[in-house]
Every structure is written in structure tokens, then in C-alpha cells.
Image (cartoon, rainbow, N blue to C red; front, top):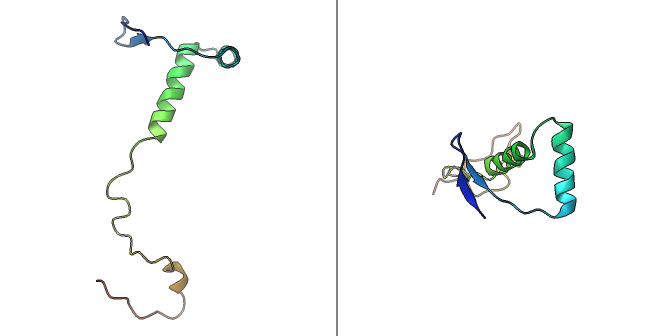
Length: 83
């Protein structure tokens, strides 16, 4: 990849695409009245947003039991020991 500093604080880079992909990018950019560069920036940002690491606390309260929701009903089961 080639990088160069642009005037608006962004870095310029070169990305290679196969011809069918490039044709699709041109078509979609034209339909949206935007540039291919803007379309690629949006796609990269969306991808990066979805691939954020999960919070370390996720699952911290997991009991280890998979039948918890099945046990909820009119009768309350005996509480399981904490440890």
C-alpha cells in the first residue's frame, strides 16, 4: 500500500480491486451520488464498528447452567448453591 498525507488530515492510500468489484463500486457510488473513496470509507468504518472487541465483563455473571429459563414457572425451584 502507498500512503501520502492529504490536506484535510486524512492519509491517502492505494487499494487494489478486481475489475468486477471496481465496476460495482463505480455503479453504487454513482447511484448514491458520492465518490468511490467515500463509499469505501463508509464500508471500512461499518466493518470496524462491527468487529469491536466485546467488553471483558460480558458473561461475568454467567451461572454455567443452561436450563435456568426452563426452571422459571409457577413453582420456584430450590436455589442452587453459589459455590
